[in-house]
Length: 169
Image (tube, rainbow, N blue to C red; front, side, top):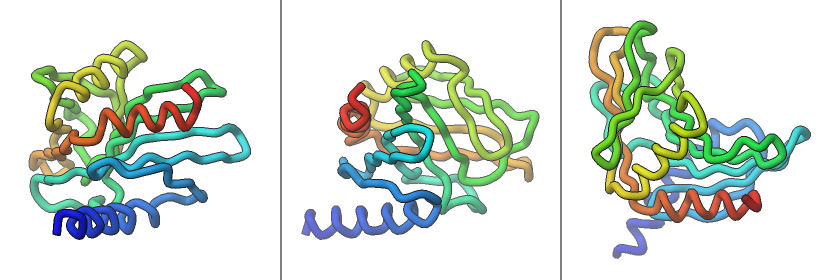
């Protein structure tokens, strides 16, 4: 029964993620809801660990596209980069806060996505993810209602490591 639930979860995750991806990607593995992909495009190989929120506050107009990604671009020396896509558009004058492992991080971003300010923040966030069971991304939507996208972190550390290995980091 547990295996069937995992298969269903994997199928739902893949069905939601794959249509949003424009280029062909190679699935490396799935770790408790965190998928790992590698892609070779004309510019360079890149790899990433990706998950969708397990809980969303309020209605979500971007639900199928909301995700949390840790990306690797070894040929550009850009590794362990945090990227968030919100479940719905946020107000341009609201802050974005990532909470994990008892720590809070203020992210930069635009109406539909956010990222860490610099490499030290990327690494601090990843350290917090490794020591926590869950995280949340919070902001205020364009409609004035709270955005709270919550993620389970079981499998995240393994997925991050697998993405790094796939790109030979």
